[in-house]
Length: 127
Image 1 (tube, rainbow, N blue to C red):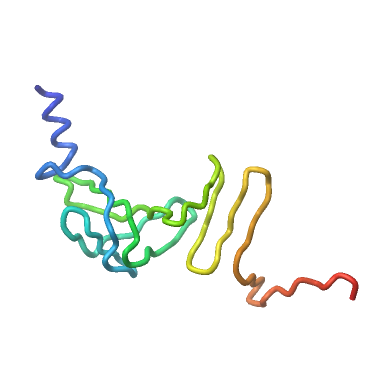
Image 2: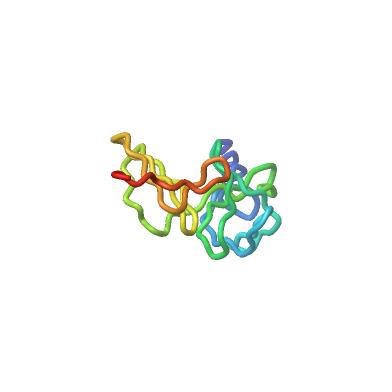
């Protein structure tokens, strides 16, 4: 009995799960997510070292916390493009640019590369 009450209270109020998949409705410094109702003015969190803003209409992970699950944040977005990553590989992407770190040590860049504010021009071999 005690354990079942603890599990119910961990879900939050009205049986809301601690995490839910939703769709972003507002992007910016704070986000809005539609998941069993819309929640607005949410902080956007990413894994260490990553800063991002989800696009409107992106699938996003909504995490609830605090007493009664009244505190929420948007913690991640689903990769709609299915990049076929192997376990341990990393892809950082936005519209038009990406960095992919492969398990074999390769780094794949897509987009225009800038170094210290200057666009990188690859040297032409043979000149």
